[in-house]
Length: 271
Figure 1 (cartoon, helix red, strand yellow):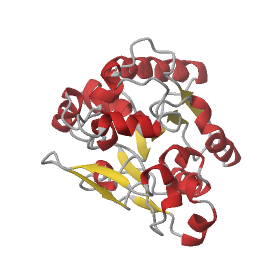
Figure 2 (figure 1 turned 60 degrees about the vertical axis):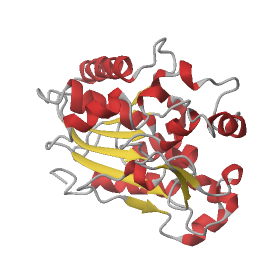
Figure 3 (figure 1 turned 120 degrees about the horizontal axis):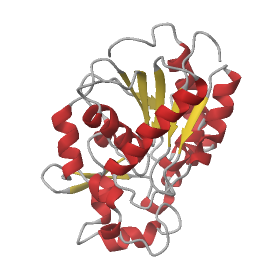
Figure 4 (figure 1 turned 180 degrees about the vertical axis):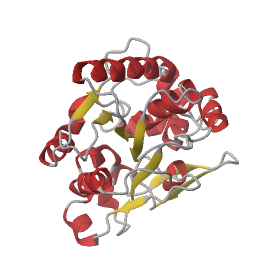
């Protein structure tokens, strides 16, 4: 590992797996950065609390194996953000024993997930699950049996706990978001290129400012300036699907942006 970098912890999203980081890891290795890739697909009780506890043990084990006790950087995708924030801000919020330099969330549901709420909606839920089955939702999916999805809903107990805990002042938080810059349906055809938003008043709307699954309103938090891609619309016109939610961890622009965050000289400090 290059002496100016820190190990990077990778945490995948819902209905995903550690292999989603293959291209990211290749980019990190090319930059001289080592990666610790955490997975929770085999957890028999995938609740944010239990997965966060497993993540804590994984970090401790990787520190022992690598004889490393300094700060680490963290990259998360989607639900991985929710899980990791629960570990850092709730379980370790007072002691701050987990030494983290910066936390980069890619398509993060920081304020809860509109899509998780949509799955459970009495009017739209069943039809949305049917439309997304095999694309974003596993066959035969029932959200009532999914504690990860239940606890990332905006009104869940876990989200309330996170809001009460607040962000840590010893970590620099980053946020990378995608949007349908050309307002084209081919971005995410099944939903007409738009992203659904759950309003605070319980209403539903759609927006171009999202990645098909996570609208910007689910992600943006005070004090954190997000990086919104694509910055070059020509890249979007060539391959818009790469900017959809599930494709973000392997998106070349996301990888480039992430490595810039990890290697810039002022990567440390508060936001």
